[in-house]
Amino acid sequence: MKDFVTQAKEFTNINSTYTLNDGNRIPCVGFGTWKIRENENGEQIILDAINSGFRHFDSAALYKSETSIGKAIKKSGVPRDQIFITTKVWKDDLCPEKARLSLENSLRDLQTDFVDLLLIHWPKASKKDNKWQNKLASTWSEFIKMRSEGIVKSIGVANFLPHHFAALQSDILPCINQIEFHPGYLQEEAYEYSVKHNILIEAWRPLGQGGLINNDKLKDIAAHHNKTAAQILLRYSLQRVVLPLPKTTHIDRMLENQKLFDFTLSEEEMAELNNLPLCAWSGEHPDTAIPWDDSERSRPQ
Ligand SMILES: NC(=O)c1ccc[n+]([C@@H]2O[C@H](COP(=O)([O-])OP(=O)(O)OC[C@H]3O[C@@H](n4cnc5c(N)ncnc54)[C@H](OP(=O)(O)O)[C@@H]3O)[C@@H](O)[C@H]2O)c1
View (cartoon, rainbow, N blue to C red):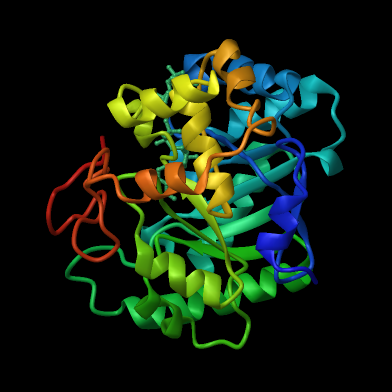
């Protein structure tokens, strides 16, 4: 199998695929669905995304976007095997029974009998959770079981730092680690660990949730290439061999976020973006700033 760097050099569009460490393939750009909900025109937004060209959708039990995705795929007429669906098991469901139930509910809402990728959404339920290692090990072993049953094709993790991986207690490595990743918040330790172990990194919040669009450095580089700041951010992710998951509700932006393959950022531009000071960070951290941490009463925005 070619390494990810070599694979990425051959990409020509958002549906060019990486071959993962388990041999399965994944389109190199995905469509984010956080805050896309059924009662807020979610089905139409996903249908627009499919019609605009996206074939890879990132969802989660937490997002409440799965019903919209399921309905939109049916309405689009695109065969299921041409769409890549990710979902996730939330941090409060990290035990075999709850993880299985979570997937069963996701399959029902997505109107499908398998997902392409299932992720552990967060390694720890709360700062005070002292059973997190045991929970990860038992959940991961259930993930492996569900994969052998064919209801999941690939399995991975999200928001894992290097020290979380050992807790899985398995020779079967995740094929994906989905982390917050964008100029201004690069998580180099998680990045290096994943690269070293042939685990593909996915970028959540690749546009800094819109917060990087007006950054002066981004605007300068965008003007130089006659591109938008969003396109520079997504191209940056691709050149770092990280799979971006941009979310938008607007059709023009869906199209814009796909035009990433007719230009290249120079080494100098990559270095400038690599060295951007801390910015557009969500404020979340896998161990110390956990969303919906009951022991902290924190809430994600
Ligand atoms: N694993 C995790 O813990 C985790 C956490 C957070 C997110 N995620 C995943 O990652 C996905 C992406 O992250 P995100 O949704 O937080 O942030 P994002 O994709 O970085 O940014 C989305 C924001 O950028 C705007 N936008 C999109 N395209 C644009 C463009 N071309 N020009 C200007 N603005 C643009 C969108 O506005 P409009 O919608 O108004 O266009 C929206 O406000 C999520 O949807 C979710 O699937 C995973």
